[in-house]
Each structure stands twice: as C-alpha cells, then as structure tokens.
Length: 191
Image 1 (tube, rainbow, N blue to C red):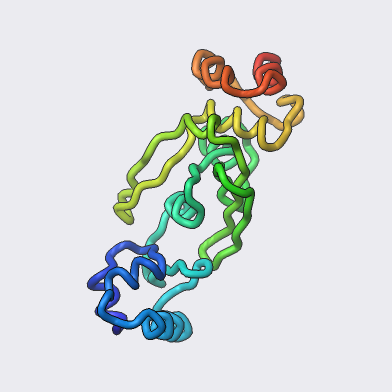
Image 2: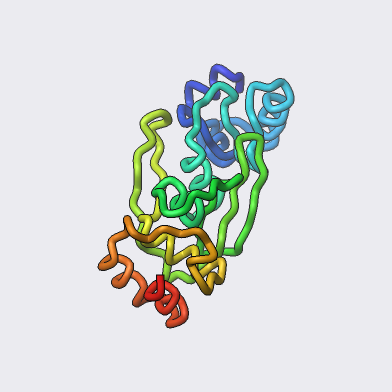
C-alpha cells in the first residue's frame, strides 16, 4: 500500500486504522500497521490518536474531528456558547458531550474535551455538513449547550459565569430543562 493507493481508496481527511484494513482487505493486517507507521514517520500521515490518522494537507474542521475522535458525542458546552455569543470566553479546546466516560485528547490538530451526560440527556443537537471535508458533525443548539454547561460544570449561578441568555429561546430552554434535575431548572429560571 502506497500513499497514492491509500489516498485513492480513502478520500475522507480523517480515518481510522480499521477503515484502512477494510479498504485493503487482501493485505495482512500486520503489514498494514507497519505501512501506516512508516507513512506517519515519513510525514505522509498525521497520527491524531491511537488508530486515527489524517492527511497532512487536509483541511479538517475541528468540530468534525471532535465527533470522529470520540463516539457518540456532539459539540456543546463552552464551544457552542462562545460561537452563539452566549459567553465571551474562548476555550482552548473543543468541548463536547458524550454518553461514555469523560475524556480529553491533545492531538497535533487541537485539543478536545468530553463531558459525560446520561443517555436520556443526549439530545438537542443537529447534524451539520462541513463543506470543506464533506463530513458531518453533530452540534448542540445554544439552549441545549447552556443546559449541558450548567449540568456538567455544576454551575450554581450563571451571573458568575458571564453568560448572556437574552438571545436564547426561553420556550426551548424551558422544554429542554424538564429532562434535567430540578437544581438545573432552578439555575436556568434564575438567569
């Protein structure tokens, strides 16, 4: 498997070792692992995390990468609150929500953090197409991101968090908050 063969079979800018094994099913797996290692060492590939790679010339949206690195997840919390204008704070990492263990990754392409939420609170996001890569990512609405933020970060008073809720839909907030514990609803009501 050469770099050219890999690029002809795997068009997405981010891919896993398993994607390569499936695409080159006639080659032995240990040989594929060796070739991926050599390509990474030569600079033909960027190792993102164990078993995940990207082409060095690829333009990858960090939100797409956040969804790919840890499944299931959707971009939320401070990342969404900042781009929605709810908070002025800029995060150094892309913040997401997952139903599995809380985790963080530092990669050559950025830092990513994931906060755990229960399965019944894993909603309120939409799927968005990234036009550069042709890949999709899931991202929370601003209202859901605020609820996730209060819940995961254990925020008791939004005034201390420099949050401006004036642009949020109060009906959506009220509807979504019914799924959260009472203390979260109380924080939102007092905002």
